[in-house]
Length: 337
Image (cartoon, rainbow, N blue to C red):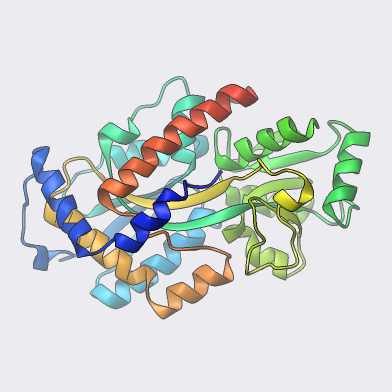
């Protein structure tokens, strides 16, 4: 499910004024600038990534960290804290000292979690401040070619329908976009594949490659290298168009699933109370890092786009995603396994 087309015009209009709006907004809710903008970052910054290493979030967090260090001269330390579909790390980030030196790289999963988990020890909108959306990639249906003999989507669908429940699919955890993408697929194709949750996309993907699970509905970013290396096979990308990085893989719309559109996006937040000038500088430096030639090449190689939504525009996008995914959870009947 992709962001509304209206966001396209917003992206074109984003300028330095958005950064200044972030400062003003933070000041309005009682966040006082603790130091001048020129001072940040005066020391290494920690970015909590709420999934194990090797997953989709890492695929963007680590290149972002490298470019940030080149631009600022300060290290952006990636701290992986996986568990419970990304909610453990989110809870840690929400309670972190709001001094400008802890950031949080979350994802679409965090707008799904409130509808899936009866109790969370944090509130996404209350406890964390959205800074910038850094990447957006379509979901891709990938299979282990040894476990699944199908060479194309049609053959795969026939195989699943003839043997309901025999195949299983791995996810980054209950309530993640991988899980909901699988449930939505089952709902729309009237098929059944058993869900196997993991503590992150990295472990799930490794088990897919090893043949311990058969199928995965993964973000294209983390699967891209393994598809190109022939370790897994891509049968479909979600959405209305093929992905430029994988032009031979058909999209869901052309395969008779026009409403199957799941996008995995990633963004950076700060703990509520983070000084306004640190927020503004973080947005500016992360944006610069994402626009370096090296980052652009990595994003393109993974079939990703840089949405460049910041501040209030990113907050509005998150609010819309929370509503959308609540409706998908209700409609699909998805539950924690």
